[in-house]
Length: 214
Image 1: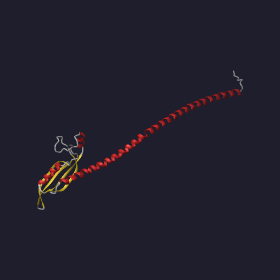
Image 2: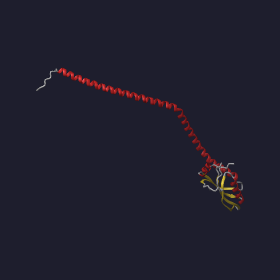
Image 3: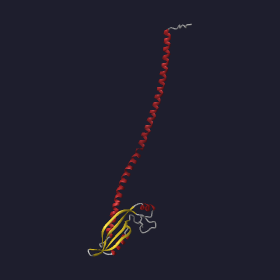
Image 4: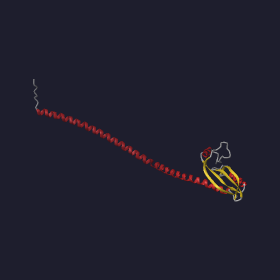
């Protein structure tokens, strides 16, 4: 049995178009709603980002004086370190010059040096407070610890004297001097130079960097 459609063709075509229009309107509405939500979310995100930027700007502005002080502190520290390096170099030179000046004062006209050697040497300290102990400024444990880790200047004197008593006198002067310690005679022997009897000697001592306080 064949079904007969009594509706005109233009009616069915128009109805289909209306249904399609409704679907398109609904899809456009959904798309507009999604775009509106997306826009609101983007606006909120931008607002939050702007707020964070403003907070960071205020923080940087408030911390600018601290940053400037820190930069100035680093610059001052760099200058102090540079000055300390210069002072350390001058200190080493001063140790040599002070030792040489003291030697020139202690050696009299009856003693002639043939050789003078000054070298850096690490000294092992005795725990029993023997004669080779360096005199310290104060009596602090820190001073003793610093002293044990330093390299001291070893001085070797070689020369001739008019008489053995002149060598003994030089050793006595070195022992009494605050600039030297651990004075030890290397050797002392008679010798003839240009038909003149003299005493050849060698003395070893060390430069004392610290002087004992009262």
